[in-house]
Image (cartoon, rainbow, N blue to C red; front, side, top):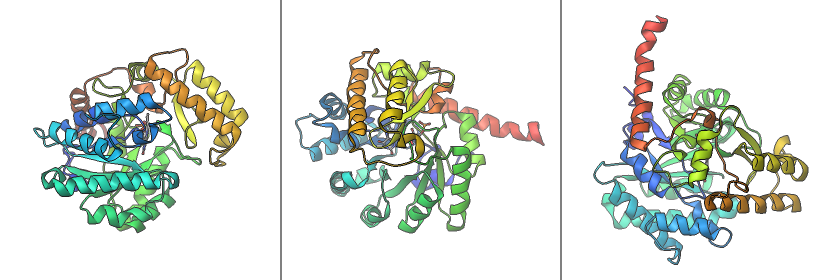
Length: 370
Ligand SMILES: Cc1cc2nc3c(=O)[nH]c(=O)nc-3n(C[C@H](O)[C@H](O)[C@H](O)COP(=O)(O)O)c2cc1C
């Protein structure tokens, strides 16, 4: 009943993507989500935190079965192998989320080359390590390398214009990410209710499947994504607050406790970001208004001004405090749907619950509305 174009394209059971959530480890989470029949995505940008956030780097490497002293390539190889081994029994499908913004190009290149090499050396892995999901940059330069290596290529966009570029570049599945979503959001954001059907309509003549992201967290919202013409939904915040999630306990509990109007937008590392509302994030928002008001005006900056740099340094320290469990200094990101998240289930139960709710709503439609 839920066998959408996304399921057919990737060979997953349910039309759900567990979002990449870097620079933090998703290593354990990805294994759990792939085993539960959705697409599991490993975040890769943790590799950039070696000098700036060594505790996050160490966690990123160690949850992947690697050592922080390994070379970056070895860390990735170990993470890929660990994921492959631990999803063998279920036949789970997984991939990597790679940020391809201009300043990360050499690192993105290394990550993608390592993935291609690893799959080449282990063809069995290629049957389930299927996806490269690029984000935060121009898709155009990446298509040939990714697709000629046999990967399915997904890319995330915040606009119809971005989707049209993806279509030209040959992206297999486009993810349209609305302003409700957790952490980084677009300089000129549009909410999912408008963005998703607009992207679906723009892509329909080209036959490119579209997935919704931003605000999707249960059966009701997955049905909404399908009703808006999507082939599925990507969920970040919802999977962050699960038993298997690699995130710090304080962060996970912060999502569960967020409540009514529980998020705000302020400076992130690379532009505006959605944070869970706390005294610390309210102060960060106030400072953003003073030091980098472009975040609220849709005027991009490159993060190099003194004000922006101070805000970014503050974020690093506050995120470290989150991992240290120091609530008085902690800052943590999450989407608007945190308001609707009140529990911390294990991934298998969560996915079963989302799928049941989705099927029941769809089955109930003829009785309710016909
Ligand atoms: C903590 C956190 C970190 C994220 N990091 C990334 C990232 O590194 N790359 C990316 O493409 N998206 C990132 N995202 C966005 C998610 O991939 C996803 O699109 C978003 O969470 C969807 O909205 P939702 O939170 O309402 O489910 C992040 C989201 C969160 C909550």
